[in-house]
Length: 350
Length: 259
Image 1 (cartoon, rainbow over the protein chains, first blue to last red):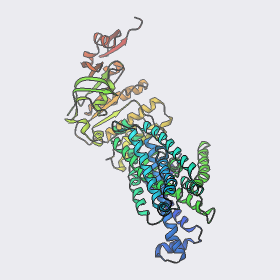
Image 2: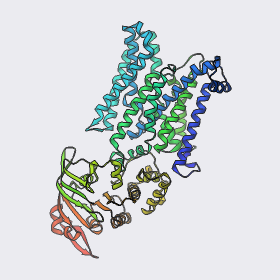
Image 3: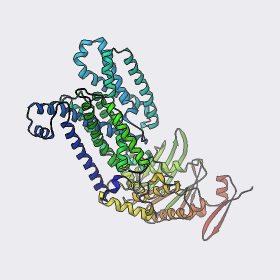
Image 4: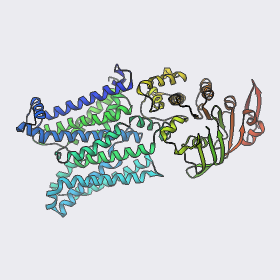
């Protein structure tokens, strides 16, 4: 029995409000915790004081200019990956689908890696100055190109053929991966370090200047997905069945593909190719609350944000003053945790 | 207030299945579609329900081209139950039935419509079972309960509504065959136009006011059970020797085995 069924509220809406409300509260707690820890020691009282007053003492500066933008960025990236993963699993009717599957992450990775290596070789002076913007911009171009290509291949007479799209995604993934491999092969040692960092993901790039754009490009599509839970539930019965129940299937699929492309494209462009969250967070939600997408999709958005911020907290505190790539943390902590959860379900101790 | 098909030609993946169908489906009746395998029964049902675009001709629901009606409104006007469904996520029976409750129904009333549909279809005992652990026949009954929930959520409309059932009894035992077809009859008595694809001619002649016998994508016979369920008609369409006899005021059919 999932936790959702043990709640003492009977109505579906009440249950959803309790679960999503708790996740939202958890997200605030995770954010405050992450603000309080890091290379420069501050305590929770200082955090709250700084947030309320905007004081520019040393602690206030660390919080306002370093930690807060990074945490906001982490929340956004996690929301994009979690929400997109949940929606894609529904569209592909496959619990193993993940934003990486439709080529978005590897397209972005190729765009970024090629910019670092080729740009570095052709115009080293320019790259030293412009890489902060040029790498995410080209990553976004790569993500968009991969998505457009896969969607174009996956369209048959105006319908999205999900199986064809999935196969095209696998092919595009393979091509982009080998492109990334080729770039790594010709990169010099310094570039290789940047590449590794990028392919494992990091939230270190965050600053207030890019955040408004990132926030719009993530919150709008993810918000649209969050309110489509009932239609996504019906889509799981099949395209024809969903249409029988009043779903405009063609429009819904288009919405999912575009929303995922925009939000994940933006997230990976700035944070690098971060796996795991899009696949695992929706599963956590299903284990906790059952398969109802009116909970799973918004819940994965909030849950993805929580997981990302906590993983980043670990990434920047285990080896102070170094930042380790967030992909390492997600794999090392998240992997065993997820395994434990699966085994606990199997042995029925949870 | 009918479903009318004029000169309809339709096909599946390039192959033409239906040829020049002219038909009118009336509300308040049960119309059974029967015929040999590949005769075009399910395709005809799909064309009437607005699932597939016809190649030629016109399908109109209450006077409007069915494909021009937005999906949300179409769902109010017609309910479709296909044989079964396949789902890889562990929804409970009540969740699947709730998907039939259309979006305009306020949150507070949804559980009542779900419980009512479960009651009407004798599925209350399955309410909290995960559908991934049900048998094929049980899933078919869940589909029917979902269809009932959909019909109940548009009960407030006063225009003609329709119910399409594609072999609703295929994997059910006798008791549930009777339950579903009795329910279909009572929907027709409440004013719905019911169209049901059936393989079993005995069930068709028991439940239907009108039987459409299809063969090769055309309507070969159209009328009440007494006009369609005849040895000469069935024998030529199915290409097998059949015996037809009357009992209890109904037509019964049996195929003659052994040459």
